[in-house]
Length: 137
Image (cartoon, rainbow, N blue to C red):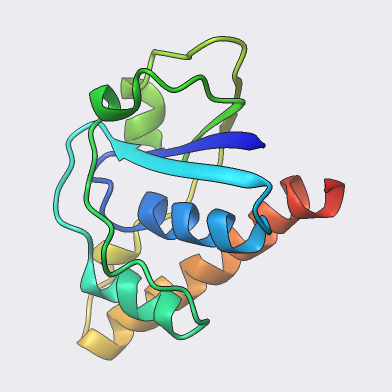
């Protein structure tokens, strides 16, 4: 079982989506978690974007780094520059990766514009997760 931690500042969008996608795409071989350096509420747009592809993260709760500090991760993947700078801890021999993704929550415009930004982020995460984990399983 590959244990992965996805980190963003708020643990509300990118990292929550990555957790849901990795768990779904991993076919039981990935145990994904997410956390934030300053957790907020899970975005309704993140929930909606994943629901469109059959993944339910409506029950996800934001977590801080201290909530997952006792887990020995194989990979720690930061998804924004703020988290990369603020995330100095690495547990065990974790491989640390940085996937810089723009925050879809700051997209200006209507709710539809925001949802489109979350959809684009979802698609980028699917490609990255499949490239790193699924193709090697």
